[in-house]
Image (tube, rainbow, N blue to C red; front, side):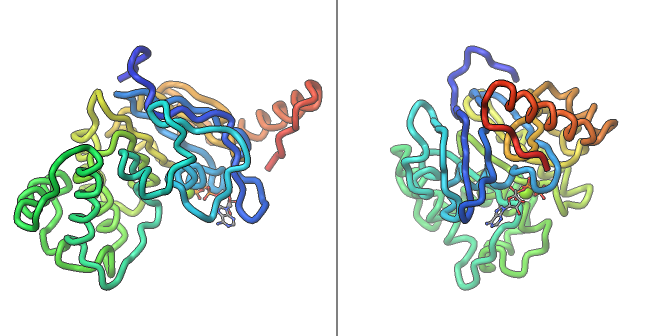
Amino acid sequence: MICPDAPVLLEIRDLQAAVDDQPILKGVNLTIRAGEIHAVMGRNGSGKSTLSKVLAGHPAYTVTGGSVHYRGNDLLDLAPEQRARIGLFLGFQYPVEIPGVSNLEFLRVATNARRSEGGLEELDTFAFEDLVRERLEVVKMDPAFLERSVNEGFSGGEKKRNEILQMALLEPLVAILDETDSGLDIDALRIVAGGVNQLASPENATLLITHYQRLLDLITPDYVHVMAAGRILRSGGRELALELERTGYDWVDQELERFAAEGQQTGRAPLEVG
Ligand SMILES: Nc1ncnc2c1ncn2[C@@H]1O[C@H](COP(=O)(O)OP(=O)(O)OP(=O)(O)O)[C@@H](O)[C@H]1O
Ligand SMILES: [Mg+2]
């Protein structure tokens, strides 16, 4: 749903970030309002996961410029766990395994941290089990996965489903899903997409990072953005994704070159090509 008057949840302005002094994000601009679904696409290595990790507060990345506001407050000032508590969620491209930590207990602690931030009472083991069983339905997940260690030995697709289960429990306001569709079989893709649609509401927003139109056939984006060389090069509606499916990314190089040339003319820092 395109909502020009809805409150802005996430405002990213000229965001720049580096890893080991190597610049990766080179000026990302993006505004996300309540009720919207955004898709970010782009070649491998264009900076999509870096953007999601910088937003989540991953310590490997240093923000070197720009700003991010979450519901009007400076997000970059906050520790990663505080970002999660106030409703920012990142579904990882490569979910991590945490051996020795029960999935059920992990989900309970995370859910309670989020609930207490929202002024809700914490759930005891029994109350949480009721909630988790209800939310398992969203992703049609077998309760047996609750008894295992977080993601340990989960198949690729099972890990992705577990990410959406986390999301269903945490009820984030801004959910960033980094290639949640990768590795899912056709049925699982439908279930996960159905879960994401079910969780989307006029109060929250979703940022989907994906390479494939097949996900966007199931979750209709309001906006599609193409990242290249660490910035958003082009934005459009859902038709942009369909166009990419036909044309691929050949135009990206030309546009980057034009961008670089314009930068030289105007005296702005030229964009590195490639
Ligand atoms: N921790 C890191 N150390 C070194 N290089 C990094 C690190 N994180 C990202 N990079 C580099 O930054 C660039 C962008 O990576 P990123 O993972 O953001 O790409 P992506 O757009 O998500 O790609 P993909 O579609 O393959 O997932 C890549 O060249 C990558 O090698
Ligand atoms: Mg990535």
